[in-house]
Image 1 (tube, rainbow, N blue to C red):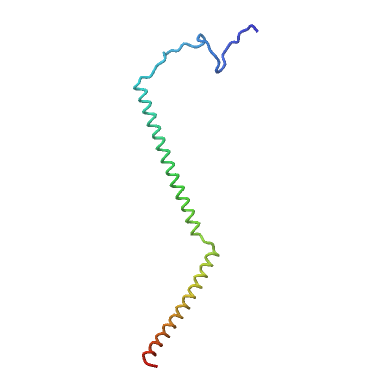
Image 2 (cartoon, rainbow, N blue to C red; image 1 turned 30 degrees about the vertical axis):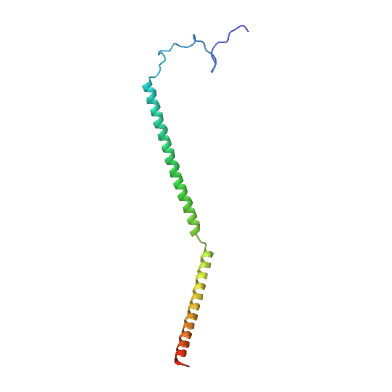
Length: 122
């Protein structure tokens, strides 16, 4: 067990001598570049937020329109039996109305006759 382990494994330590010499020296960005990158990220973040708000608004409007359309469609939809019952009710209402009108006309005629008799002294 006196032999040394050679090679490297991911995440393990490495020796400075094992690394290849870099061609470039480390570079620190200038303040102007940092501010430009910050402004660029801020604009992109604002664009993303605006896009998200527009998408949510469109989805909300479409969802509301779908819900209102569904509710109105269900309310206006009638089955054949419901339509038949409504037609029968309308017919019976019309029959009753015509009878009521006929009786009222007869009553008015009788009242007119009684008024004429009262004036004539009968």
